[in-house]
Length: 100
Image (cartoon, rainbow, N blue to C red):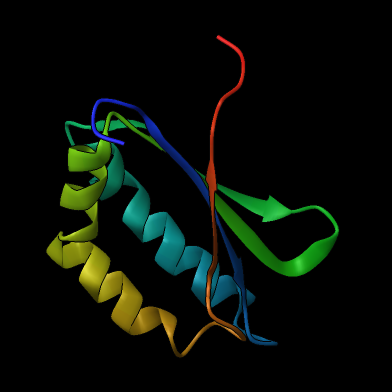
C-alpha cells in the first residue's frame, strides 16, 4: 500500500454508563493525531442509532504515516485506557475510495 492513502473507520462501543468517558478520551486524541504530518483527516463521530456507538474516520497520506501514528506514545496511552471503557474490541474497517 506504500504511496496510497490509508482510509479506515474504527467503530467503538462503550460499556453502559461509560459513554461520556469514552467520548472524552477519544476527543483527547483528536488534536494530537490531527497534528501529525501524514494526517489528512481524523474525525470522531457518535452513531445516530446507537448511544453507545462511536466512530473514528481517518485518512492517512500513506502507509508510513499510518505506521507512525500507530507507534505514537499517545495512541499507546489511548489504547491502554480504552479497555476499561469499551464493551468489545474496536471494529476496524479499511476502505478504498472508488471515485476521485
